[in-house]
Image (cartoon, rainbow over all chains, first blue to last red; front, top):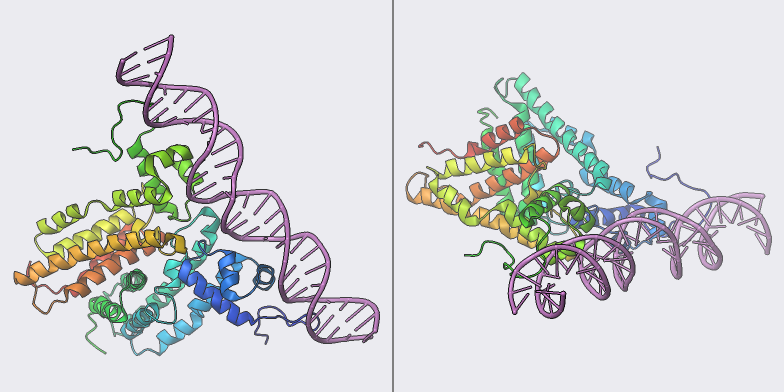
Length: 206
Length: 206
DNA sequence: TGATTTTCATATTGATCGTTATAGAACACT
DNA sequence: AGTGTTCTATAACGATCAATATGAAAATCA
């Protein structure tokens, strides 16, 4: 099983940079400054790679961003697994929001959420990128809804539980915390918000 | 009391366009496409005004956006008045979030919130614009906090009420709903989220 | 060593960015 | 009508945008 994106070549001059490290830098730059508002010039400076090498290694700006986004968001399977392991849907969601609160206020990374910030708006040229990010959010939402419905079936949550509303609320709070973090809110503040947002889960058990 | 921005002139060629209407169009364009990602060319097309006229009437792109933003956000005094009129802080906040849910899903306007979308990220050149938008959000937050503390003083809310947490939660849900709306969520969905987000307000009275 | 393959650095492409210089057009006042 | 003032349209400014053409450099393979 080949792990690297490009097929390993047997001849020719070798890459002079670490592709993964460069992608990481690109991700951080998009996270900090957004998709359209990050220039190729910004990327070459941050990645330490010249423009032609970026294009050779990643395609174009759009594909570079999409790859960086997938690196940020992680694999959907991993999220689903984390949700499956959690004792209850409530725990899973609370953990997700708390982790987001911590991620958005990390010292080593830009404030807020890449998915919330990078393509909040933009020109028509970037509509497909916005759609890709929206799709990423839909995947997260679907995982939450699914996990809640498992708890309903198992009697851990009342049948009247509105799984989609709770999932949308969790997603809204998460994306909203990104704005707070961008505005300078500290980790403690976000964790308090995360905790307060769970009040709607009146699951008496667990 | 002079109402118009520019002083009324007594001589010279009159404006060939409606300044207020043009500003409205600019606001909608920024709302739809963001600050940096909206070009002057986009604005001339939307406003029906040539570039030199825009610059004469509004200064530059930055000042045009700031004026459009103030038009969108309204006067802080008006918000404060609406909060003062409301029977309780809880009612005031619930109304604010519900109004946001309706605004973000309006048919005649772009989806989501201009304050959340237009400058979620961007280049260094636009950092002062981001700060201005952040300041706008801080004003809203301050109004919420203040209103909650009034209720606490009057015994309508328990002294243990964490006014800042509730205000941050309200702001986060509001800004988060903007993302949901951008992703295509309908009005009913957002209103359900708005309602669910108020669960933390266990004010037994009123 | 020489041929082949791939990446490298430099420089440049046409397009678009925000902004403005220029000159004519439309008004009020004399 | 003539003058002064302000706005409008055309065209252009230098800068920057995303993306590449070019040819030298660095590796493998024969």
